[in-house]
Structure formats: C-alpha cells, structure tokens
Length: 138
Image (cartoon, rainbow, N blue to C red; front, top):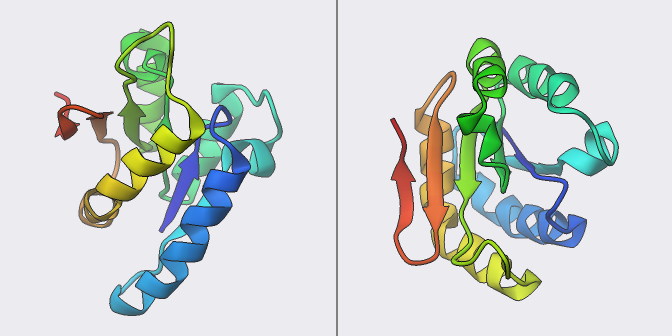
C-alpha cells in the first residue's frame, strides 16, 4: 500500500515516516510505503496528473488541499480513480502548521491513518484536525 504526502509537506517528513514505517511493516499483511508527491511526480504536479497514477497504484494521499473535496471536478477525479484522502486541517488558515507540529500530528494519528488505508478500498476521505483527530467525512 502506498501513502503519498502532499507536495506542501517536507520530503524530510516523508522520509522520516518511511523510516519508522519500515519497522512496523513486519506486523502487516501488506507493507506500507510513504512517498512524496513532489518527488514522485514533480514539484507543482497538477491533480489531473498525479491522482490517476496514485489511483492506479490503489494509493491514498495525505494533503492540505481541502479543494480536492470541495471542488466538484477535483472530487470527481478522486472518486473516479479511487484515491483515498486524509485532509489535514490546521487550527488557523493564516498560520498553518509548522514542521514540528505536522510531525507530531501525523505520528500521533499514524496508526489510525494506516488502519484506514489498509481497511478501506477505493475512494474515501477523512479529515485530520489537531483538536479532533481523524474523522471520516461523508
């Protein structure tokens, strides 16, 4: 199973999660690989380019881009290609989240993210908030 991190997240975060995940993969039927959208598809890759490729791999994405659910065209793109999403919502749109806050949030909820990714197939979308945790969106 492949989990892609949004290009607005540091590749260092991606590599760190992958290093941690390697030791956790021994307990899983399907190993999890964490990849960077920017590194795999190029910085500035359009959703129309990376979403079909992630869907082909039956992957999911962790992103800041709530428009993937709000914009009809982008939502339909994710649904059509069966891409699961975890959308991070910062406490403040203006301030966003600093790197270390992102690390803490993802590590805290990593088991839940992997559980969702391994038990869901096709398109799904969850929201991840620092205050409320991981919650499925309908």
